[in-house]
Image (cartoon, rainbow, N blue to C red):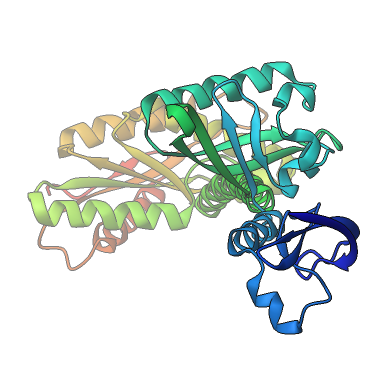
Length: 377
């Protein structure tokens, strides 16, 4: 075998070098110091490129593919020494794959707790002899940024049966960050939606209360606080419908203060208003809880007495008359009351009101401060 020196360029990794050549089997051959490919010298014909060592070519192509991959690719032995480390892994640790080969991660990663965690994990995979796929994190030494990876860990057997592990880790940090951002947005939207729902619920309750108050105002006499004409008519209609179902009659009292216009003209409306309020209180304190009393307007009042016979209605009417007469104030008050019974044969709920109203005027014609009613129901 004869040796010589030859200047050439590797056709695979394009390294220019001056390398000692060997004359073997009648051919001068050179070896690339970078990719270790061997082949004929540059003095041979162009077709000689086809005779470059195929194993070296395959190794170079594999090295190129591994280093071009954005995924972290590495092989470690049981002691944690790198047998293969691609550019993505070297960049993560701020190193080169040449420096990493033969060393452990402890030489490049200052987080020794993390290094030991990964080594223990690799041992479990190699001992179990089963491939695992997991999601995990790693810290970029150069930036301190935490990166997310989806890792495939494959146990291998090296020369002489020594255990090894192949790890291929895809960086899913951008995906995970977007997922985290989306989750944060969903959480924020959930909180906002909950606040909106609570606000809508509060506003609904406020509106319901406001509507209830408006309905009360629409059915309440502002001076005395008694139900007004609208509420009184509604109550009469309800009682009439109930009577149609149960055939149980009820009684109606139509009541009007005597000579109230003269009191207003003599003492003024403020005194008259105070008297109306006093009369309303007397009526409310006299009737039963199941009874109804309302102000129709002016000095006119109505009472509805469900489930009361004629005798009971007369007794209650007399209590009201006497209580009004007994009121103390600027002027003496009396009241005329007309009583009528509502029965199932009535055409509508207002029939009893009309009849009671007629007898109320009859009481006034008979001298006021009295009760007038039909001789029988």
